[in-house]
Image: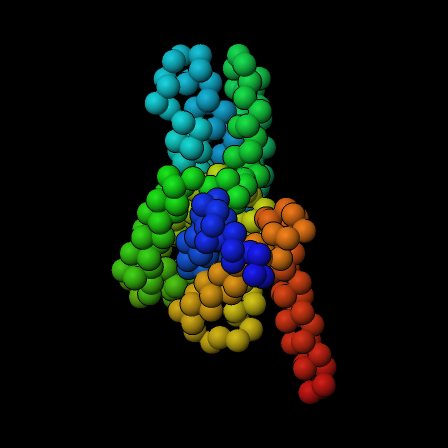
Amino acid sequence: MTEFLDAVFNHTFMFYALLTGILASIACGVVGTYVVARRITYIAGGIAHSVLGGMGLAYYLSVVHNLTWLQPLHGAVVAALASAVTIALAGLYFKEREDTVIGAIWAIGMAVGIIFIAQTPGYNENLMSYLFGNILMVSLGDLWLIAALDALVLVVGFLFHKQIAAVCFDEEFARVRGVNVQFFYLLLLCLTALTVVILTTVVGIVMVIAFLTLPVAIAGFFTGKLWQTMVLATLLSIFFMTFGLAISYSPDLPAGATIIILAGLTYLAVTAYKAARKFRRS
């Protein structure tokens, strides 16, 4: 632990990695609570994989048509929002099964991305790193981007918490109470899409999906209100990020994988403890 702390204070990349973990924990704690409450975790996974299409198109246009200002992240954001809107419209207005639509978007997005990447001269292999991320390679620009995401998430959560919570728990009751279910469900999906795509390009798909679910699931064992779950999930995420980085530093283990394993083992331990208590009472 001492070596890790020395590295944080003496090496910029470790300081940025730790700060990234803290900032990412805020977005994951808030959005993840809504995602788990609405039971749309699979949507986050579908959006995360579909963004390859937007990234591939942006890369193709920047290289082939000299649109040098266009970055893969721009294409990823557009693709993520388009996927969120498509899923929402298909479920709310066309009554299509969401899992079917997500499967189609997932497959089409990745196929489109592969085609554009293949058609781009001088294919840049580093583009694939956007799908898997590297928390140890975060730049100052990435930190500002995540901080902006946190600000957006907190503002939306503060202004519309009751409406989004109502849509998450009981859509019909929310509609009876006069809540615009379509709008707030779409808002939730767009917020989820932005969280997924921005964090995916920094820390990777697997970690984003894990941190949208595992800390929230653990926090749910100990809390009774949605806002309490958000707070505890955020604190747990910060704990996992910090100690995962610390554990991985000395033996030079992959930081992302170590963080996810720590969170996963904690979730399994809490689940087993809860099951054991329930068994003793019966």
